[in-house]
Image 1 (cartoon, rainbow, N blue to C red):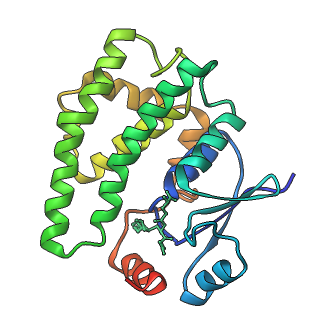
Image 2 (cartoon, rainbow, N blue to C red):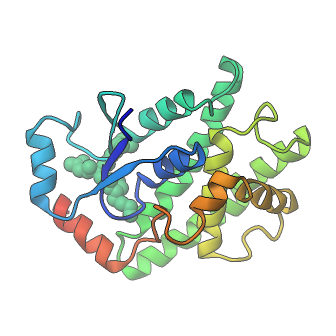
Image 3 (cartoon, rainbow, N blue to C red):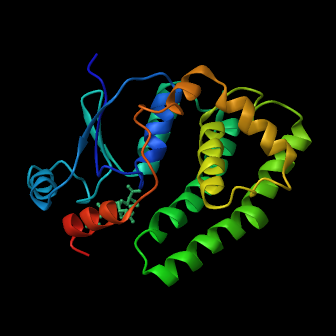
Length: 221
Ligand SMILES: CCCCC[C@H]1O[C@@H](O)C[C@@H]1SC[C@H](NC(=O)CC[C@H](N)C(=O)O)C(=O)NCC(=O)O
């Protein structure tokens, strides 16, 4: 079968969680990077963007947009969603929470310097006071290696991505969360994820001023 093809900017944004899921599932994928307004307008003109937006993922003969819909499809397809509806909705809850936090970080890149620092500091505060305490408690209460059903799932991938992203902003962010520290080591050592964390993988770096400029230019905002 053809490899999935991802259409997005050459950066993290909303697409990074999709790259993580595919990589963790051991699925090779291709990427088309939007560098110009013309490329984006062509996708729109060709009717390939349902609501005129990216991420766009070509997979199984479909053109998928809407990040959460794409992630949910991929999680189910690669057996990273729950064994039943009750597990799946918990995985969705956990994943949605991490996506909210990730978007705060992603959008901060587009703010003016002083606002950006304030937004990133708020994201770190939210991680420490709202999100990480929840996941630390889940790991404590269930005493299992994974968040749901003691089986590796999409929720675990999202949590690792958000842990690493927050550590880029504050290296001591896990200092009060010993179980999350162990979780990070455990999940980072899963072979497909270990490979994705190595240099040369399709993982993208944190957004820089060039990336912000390109996205602003393409989206004209
Ligand atoms: C560094 C991270 C990138 C920040 C900017 C991105 O975050 C998004 O808020 C904007 C972009 S992503 C690009 C943006 N896509 C979306 O907002 C998708 C939202 C959708 N609900 C989804 O989850 O996929 C876009 O195509 N906009 C054109 C426009 O709406 O006309």
